[in-house]
Length: 193
Image 1 (tube, rainbow, N blue to C red):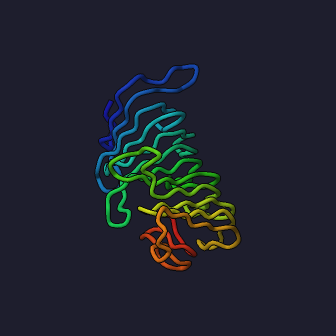
Image 2: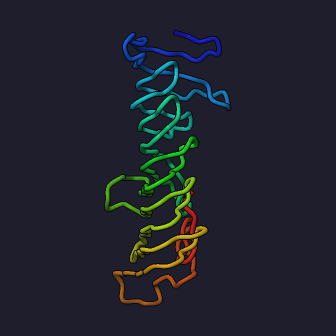
Image 3: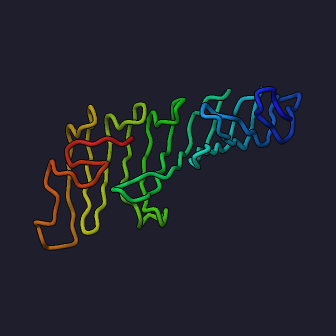
């Protein structure tokens, strides 16, 4: 079925008892490019489980209610230290697909999404995509990694414990408090977004 605005739906039409349909919905976004949704719909809105693939290749797989995303996993390609990487955001989201509530952000090397290729992991409370409140943040370098467990306020580590671990005996190779250790996270202040 093709709508007047050029959107297109391919699938089963609503059942009388649930008013749910299932199928693939192709629609033009604000930039006149096609996003694709595969999953359940109710009254022409995403409803229930589904997968939304944006025109840029990012995907959100999760749950919607009357067209509003509730929770799921957003996967996208990003630049991390000037190199391509995968980013995965897991948890409840707002209308812009930003984490909002208890969630997790994991950044992987571009070549893999295995646990041994993690570059950064942040777990905790998120407010509109930004870590806020209790959090655990881990950053992994080639010969070291750092962990912070504590409270985050205004995108800065507020109270907590930070540890730096390394596989080299050269202390001079370790990052110092306040030094930038990658383009996304600093030892004493950071932003994940």
